[in-house]
Amino acid sequence: MLDVTKMDASLATIVDLQSTLAPVATGFDFLEGPVWHPENQSVLFSDIMGNSLYSWTAADGVMQQRRNSYMANGNAYDAHGRLITCEHATSRLTRTDLTTGAYEVLATKYLGRELNSPNDVVVKRDGTIWFTDPTSGRSAGYGVPREPVLDFSGVYCFDPATSALTCVVRDFAKPNGLCFSADEKTLYINDTVRQHIRQFDVTANNTLENDTLFADLAGTAPGVADGMKIDQAANVYCCGPGGVHVFSENGTALGVINMPEHTANFVFGDTDLKTLYITASTTLYRMRVHVPGYATFQPK
Image 1 (cartoon, rainbow, N blue to C red):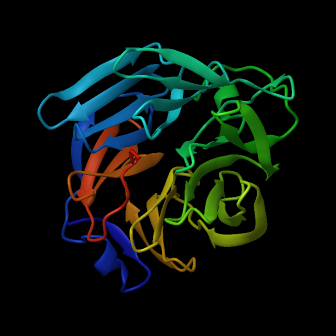
Image 2 (image 1 turned 180 degrees about the horizontal axis):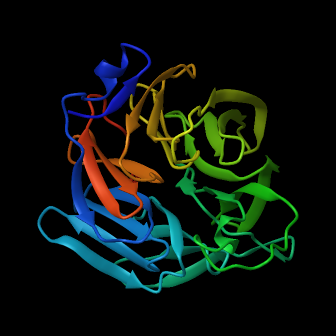
């Protein structure tokens, strides 16, 4: 059975409490950025300090997809199945066609100044790419130590159609995980330093308004506000102290899936999208849930 801290009885209807937390692959340095590909039933993920991208399938196990990933962190797929990646070592947002190997730099500077270290990324259905840019990748243990050029840590919207890079919010101490609601009218962003999640209304022209506090990530166990996703019942999952925290649509804390290692991110996978693949430091784990999530590759 799972090790959980239950704060509300409804947690049992969301997470399969009879499931087991099973290691899928281990021996890595610091795992992050898992994304699920429904067509080939694979999890692709980053090993930041191992400086590599890997994939896992039930048939083939772990396969290295890229050596020298520039300390890749967050990943996402666009509507064409191309991989969007945040690179700690280069301060770049990049795009890779996994079929041809074609690699492009999408964004590396804002108003002529180098980005901090793009961290986590999501792709909106209109094709715009949204990412957080804390200074984490400029510190030892997470990237290449170097001084930041920008004097703030922003959240950005990149439009591939015009190459325009817009800073949509810049008052976070350390923005990290982010995700949209199902209708993409709400954007959730968490803050590693302040240990909370904020929510914003997304306007028709891709600006943010009505900034409100969604939830606090309480706890003294190892871990910080990090990777974040929603399920198909609008529950919000977010990495935090001790493991993966689960909140209702209105921000009520429902419980914590306790993890044996520092946990940075996760993704919903398998054919029913009811398996949670969790990147926790040295190990990729999986467990089952009752409510499916969303595929991280949604072709048009």
